[in-house]
Length: 187
Image (cartoon, rainbow, N blue to C red; front, side, top):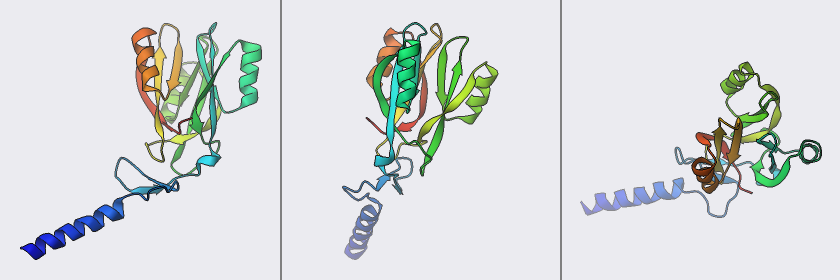
């Protein structure tokens, strides 16, 4: 019996060591869904996702293009709100495109990684504008959730990585929480 327990303990230790991610290795991380190490894209290839807000249109706007944000600030009254997150400008392993749509009738930008939602929002008179970047579909590689909120009265969508902001917008500003659209790198 002592030999069997010893062999079991040794085998368990080997399995635990083999499945554990290497410490200090930025090249791999653990996918929380099945605990399998995955090779992560180089974080140095990520770029800042800029955030702006238009008080007159009650619209949150996100882009990775500094010139586009400067144009929104200088010509359309948006206020620079800094960085929302870091995303990849090009397709990387384990990333999906994030689509940006615009409804000029109600003044709302909408972002999603779901192709069916793109089609649905186009039927709701939104226009596809571009793909500002790529984000993870699952929480891997030190990523954090990006939450989507919607204020029906202001016809505005808001996106944040902050659980504190999510709670504040829901409790105090009339937004409804719509879930996680994907996972991004923190600022």
